Image: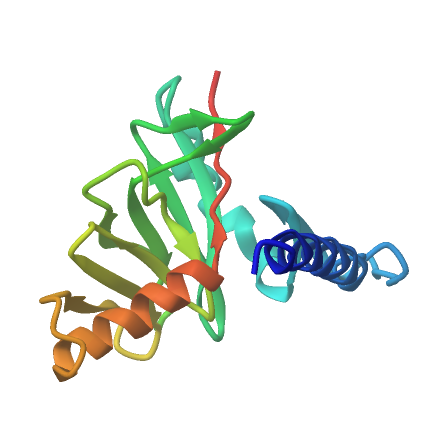
Length: 193
């Protein structure tokens, strides 16, 4: 048995190194060509192409009115538009600017910019994350998903709480939202200096 343990450890290490190289190769976007019509932004380590970001000039008045030290970012929160997120207390972490709380602005059904509401994690260890047309936020015992409903000019929020019972439907909903949070990309903000 003692001889099998070092072999298993070595096998797991080789497997993890191989998976790392495999995944790094899958993330290389440098071979793609982008046109002038594509708007490109970098969010964390992922390049995201958004055809809606071309219309972000509509948010210039809001960005211009922000005070020094606050921050802003754009996030994919609807199938037909990106939303502006404004953070009054951004967090500088590991060379990037993140936020646990932000005010959300998006266009209503008539194309007018409107304050849609606020998204807020209760802890800075769960910064705001974008995934699948939504922003995720929460606490250690609840997780929420916010998306923009352009047709009804509002922000929809879905929340699930953990109760520790793996057989309970509510807890399963929490686990699904928490899994999506883990799949998402931490939203990187631009801080105003």
